[in-house]
Image (tube, rainbow, N blue to C red; front, side, top):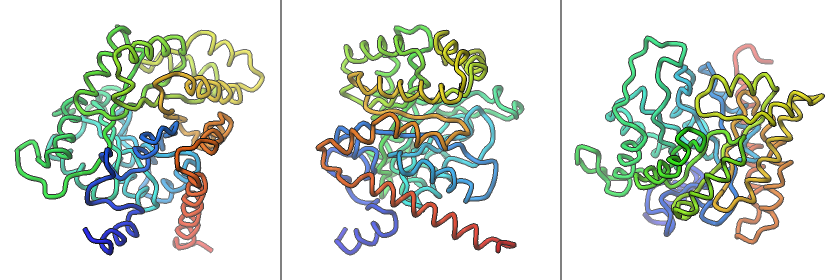
Length: 363
C-alpha cells in the first residue's frame, strides 16, 4: 500500500485497516497499542438499546468516550434481544471509537460467524471477545433454538486461523485477513477454583491475547487466583483486565449474588452497603477502591467496568480512581492521549446534536 492509499484509509477509519499492523501487534487498534505500551487500560460495557435509533448508541458512548480505551458491544447478553454487537460496532467505528465486538456462539453457526468477523474487520473493528454465551433458557424467549456450533475455544481457534493463516475453516483462502486483537472472558470465582487458572491457560493456547474477567468483589479470592496465574506465567502471555462495577444497593448486590451464576459478593460488601446513608455513593466508592487495589496486583493490566444502565457513573469512577492521572505522569510515549479522548467525546456530542436536529418534528 502506498502513502496515498494509507492516508485515505486513515481518513475513513481513523487508522489504517488493511496492511500489516505494527511489529509485534495483531491489529491497528488503540487497545492493543496501549496494553503493549504498558498502560493500565480501561474498557467498559455499552448497554445496547432496545431500539433502531443510532443516537441512543451515540448518547451512551459519549459518556464513555473520554475515559475508556475501548467500549464493549455486548452480543444479546443474558440471551435477551437488543441491538446487535456488530451493528453497535459499526456505529462506534463511524465515530472513531474503539469497540470490542463480543461474539457469542449461541445464536449463529460457523458460516455466519466467519462472515461477521470479516464484515466487522472491514468496518474497522480491531478487538473481538469470544464467548460461548448464555443458554437461551435464561432469557425472555426460552423457545428460541440454540446453535452452539462453536464454543469459546473453537471460536478463538477459528478467528486466529482466519487472521494468521488467511483461511476459512473450509481451507478456502482469505485475500485480506481480519487484523484483530483476540480476547476471551474469565471467571475466577466458579468452582472448582483451583481449575480456573488452567481454564485461562487453555483459552490462551486457543488464541486469547487479552481477557476480561467477571465482576471481582471478592478481592482475597482474586488475589489467590492471580498468584496462581503468575505461577503459571500466564500474565506474560496475555493481558488481564479485571472486571469491576458499582453496586446500587445491598438489595441489588444480594440479587446478583443469588441469581447470576459465577458472581460472588462477600458479606462485608453487602453489609457496607446496608449501613451506608447513601448506598449508591457507597457502591461507587467500593468500585473506586477496587480499581486502586487492582492497580497494585502484578499481572493485572487494566480494568473492565460493567455499570449496567449506569454509564454516566463510569467517568466519575475512572477519574476518582486516579488511573488517568497516573497515565499522564507516565513515560510511555502517549502524551496527549487524554486530549484525543476528549476530542472523540466532543465529536460524539456534535454527532448527537446534529442527528437530533435533523429529525422530523425537531425545532
